[in-house]
Image 1 (spheres, rainbow, N blue to C red):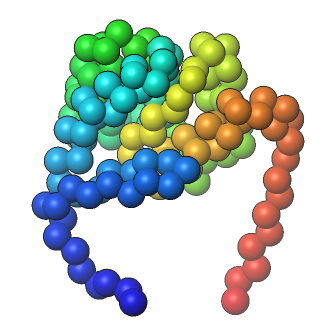
Image 2 (spheres, rainbow, N blue to C red; image 1 turned 45 degrees about the vertical axis):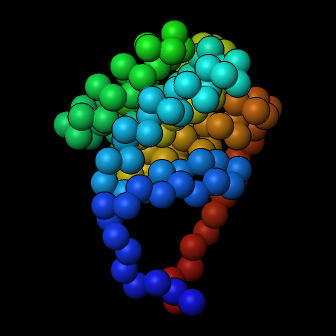
Length: 140
């Protein structure tokens, strides 16, 4: 059954192949996330975001401090635009591969999160850097 409303002040966690946090204040979970990454032996991450929202929202200050506190090195790819292109995804994946990132953190809305998911797959399967998926959407 579909739920039409939920309490945005309640932070909840959804775990699947990825871990997602929702709700007002969810960014504060970043300290726990960084500790979990460190405990799992992750030492390098790539952070993916749009050009400015990650700073305007204050998310950058929290993410940066949490990673630095755990001694986790990071690189930032902040060139994601609405409706991102394969060029941007390839550029970010290349950055992650060269940095030898072991995890991906996406900050933002749909486009940065979509790019972050794509990068995670491309880091795991570098051969996909040259693979092209074509999708043709037909209006209904």
